[in-house]
Length: 213
Image (cartoon, rainbow, N blue to C red):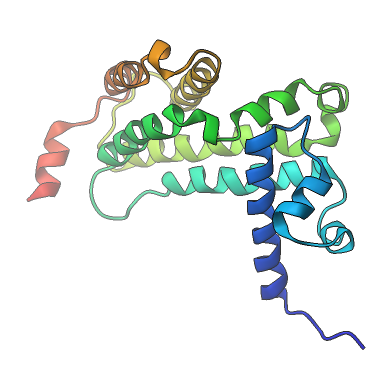
């Protein structure tokens, strides 16, 4: 009789497999990655891998979820202090991520979104639209919280501003992947984003001063 495996162990093992799969997708992209590559990277048997994932598409979606969760955590507002510095810090930190674009999932994502399996069967991949809406929602919630606290006075709807931020970042990522950060001037473009965002949400400087005392 096989020993019982705890749920905690299963979750931890699944996380390890997802991290191994992420490395494979970064190295090979989506099109050339295989379940065998993931088995080799994780040092796991075929049966063990398939006990967690049905196929390479399933693995990739789980890797996306894992990667997205890290971004979402950036937007969990601190209960103390103003929100503008937090939002500004997240945007500034994107420079590090974007300039190391060849060490990210951007290439694999591009291949997946252009793949026949996805373009002709979008209904089979509901998470793709869910992730877009979820990330937008968490950004929008930060903006709405700023309004509730009296820190932000948006000049446009928070709904539209959240999408503007995400579209800008995603577009800069793709351009940088294609051309290199030397051409896209990531730091300069993010400075422009911050400048325009400050005009859009109008953070109150007096709010910052009051809460720094």
